[in-house]
Image (cartoon, rainbow, N blue to C red; front, side):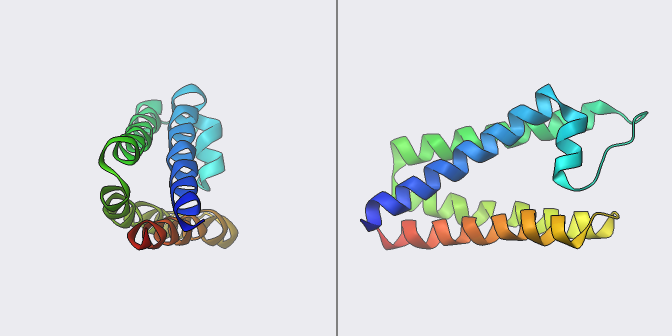
Amino acid sequence: MLHTTAYGLALLLDLLVLFVGARFLVQPRAAASGYGVPAKQDGDAAYLEIKGVRDAVSGIVGLALLAFAGASAEAWFMLATALAPLGDTVIVLRNGGTRAAAFGIHFATAVAVLASAALLFAV
């Protein structure tokens, strides 16, 4: 049961970040609004697309680690990756985003990623 839960949560989180990356590539301004800090209409969309590529790559790396390297490697990846949503929490708060977006989206994601790491270490 623990094995299934650990791998299932890791798979879900990897696919989620891959989806977020794809959304930043396909609908960058809508994705930025969902992030918690809307992009300016006259701003440079390239930076939003860069975020999309990086998020998508993170999801792919996570999936590859899970499939080919196992739980321990994925656990270390998740532990390091948790820094991204923690940083996102601060970015949203410092740039006029709502506390609901900062904590309800980004901080909650960091907690889920850390929980995933803990489960994977326990497997």
